[in-house]
Amino acid sequence: MQNILKVRYWLILSLMPALLIYTVIVIVPIFWSSYYGFFSWTGTTDPKFIGLENYIEVIKDPIFWRALKNNLIIVAASVFGQVPVALFLALMLRKISLFQRFVRSAVFLPMVISTVVVGLIWGYIYNPQFGIVNSFLEWIGLESWTKSWLSDPSVNMYAVSVPIIWNYIGPYLIIFIAAMQNIPSEIEEAAKIDGANGLKKLIYVTLPMMWTTIKVAIVLCISGSLKAFDQVFVMTGGGPAQSTELLATYMYNNTFVVYRYGFGSAISTMIIIISLILIVVSQVVMKKRNKKGGKE
Image 1 (cartoon, rainbow, N blue to C red):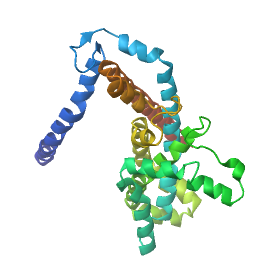
Image 2 (cartoon, helix red, strand yellow; image 1 turned 120 degrees about the vertical axis):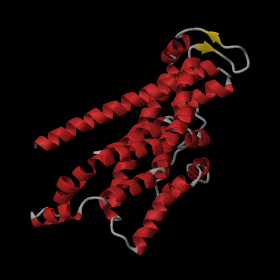
Image 3 (cartoon, rainbow, N blue to C red; image 1 turned 90 degrees about the vertical axis):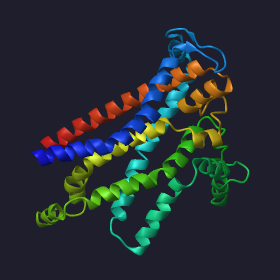
């Protein structure tokens, strides 16, 4: 018992520096930003307390709701794009070989590239005059499908979702491969003896053993998607006519373009609240499905 207490003591002591740094860099600024959301402040003048006016204005602003709708598209595209693709690739690349190592590196490479560079690259890819997408469609005889991908409000949100999915598949691939490698070999051998091979093994052994990891990946996916900024800002700047406006670009434009720091702080607080709500809802839904699967 004393040994266990000593281990816990040293674990807590070793984690304290990292926890302290995280609190100062992340937690304190969150509350500080929420505090300034109650003020009218341009960044140069003295803050003037106005109560909930900034938060009420955010809720009443139609651009906020458009940005939220666009962000939900990014969240859905990320959750149903990054996670399933990464899981499929992890299943295909689970074994270690020279070719599979090469493919893993190729999939992870976009994560190493700067997000600004990714936005510039995909901006050229979508270019209506010399972009690869329109050139390919013309080459295969589908000229009628060519579009101004980043200017057409009917498709531009889906177009900007593709680079975000492509950019962040790599980390989830590594996470899922690590989770698969941690599945005890005894369980897999027992499944083979019981005749669980292929799809049955995936459904009844692999996925249940990885379920916690998948839930963590979805949390990361949701929180990361709600902070999406770089690629969209580089490709479209939130335009045209706010058709690709996201919550982060909406906050940036109000804070650093028109110098409404108090209003921008209120928007950032709303982003945190929305992120927490989506994460809680996703975890509740996945927990219910997991319980149903267990009963079955």
